[in-house]
Structure formats: C-alpha cells, structure tokens
Length: 193
Image 1 (cartoon, rainbow, N blue to C red):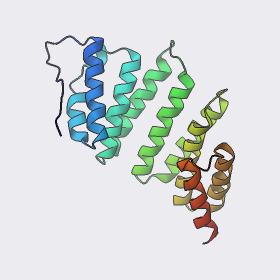
Image 2 (tube, rainbow, N blue to C red):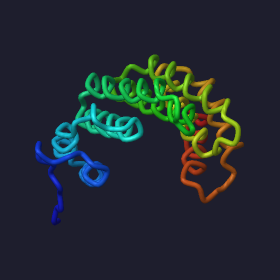
Image 3 (spheres, helix red, strand yellow):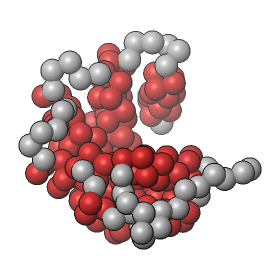
C-alpha cells in the first residue's frame, strides 16, 4: 500500500485546498483503520481558522478515530464540539439533520463505552429530531432505530426492541437491503428465545 499524504507545515496557509486534502487524508487513514495516523493529520490542522462546516466535519472525524481507538472520553469531547458548532451556526443548511447525525454519533460513542442507558437517551433525542424533519430519508431513520433497538437489548428492554425492529421493517421493505435482512434475522433470533 502506498500512502500519498499531504502534511501541512505551520507556515502553510490553511486554504480550502489544504483543508480538503487534509480531510481526504484523514478519511483515507480511517478507511484502513489507521486511526492514530488520522489523528496525527487531524490534530495539526488549526481548527479555530476553519469555517463552521469544515470545523464540524473535522470534529466528527477526530471523534470517530478516538472512538475506534477506545478513547471514548476524548471522542465525546469532539462530538460535543461538533454539536456545538452546528447549534451556534445560523446559516447551516439541514441544521436539524446535522445535529441529529451528530447525536447518533454520540450515541454510538456511549454504546462503545458500554453506557447503554445514555446511548438510548441520545438515540431517542436523535430520532425525535429525525422524525420532525419533513422528507427525511427512511434509511437514515432505520439506521437510527437499529442502533436504538440494539442499545435497548443491552439494557434488557427486549419487548421494546422487538417492537422497534418490527417498525423498521415498515421503513425498509426491500428484501435486498442489508438492513432488512439484518432486522429479519434479529427478529427471528429474538422470537426464538
């Protein structure tokens, strides 16, 4: 594997081109589960000089790498920063959707930390936002519901999880969709216990 990485020197200006190259480098490293390398690139970017959209994107990428490295407290710090950026920005297209996506990421971090009750609370917040958005894609809501149902199972709320899994089938009625197959298999497993 050959890596083509553009490291930003302190004297480099942080123009849009350098930002996009650095973000692409971070995403490349993450794709290959090279999270320490992703953080090396991410943490050298002067975040305070970024526009809100790139600041949020970078915070989410940093949070992802910390979570993948098992550093859930650090991951929470950065996802909370991403949420704060979105909430304080007035000119953000799809602001509510972005907040809900960030909340889903936060729920996944709580899941990784085995804080399942907190994960459920965060997933419910995200779902509430998703459901309030007119025209939201069913797939996004289905993903959120799957995460929520899985977290419910981890806190022994089996009946509620089964109910949610059944609801998911109403959103995804394509048998070729991986989520559909996952939910069918999960329901079969839960109903045969």
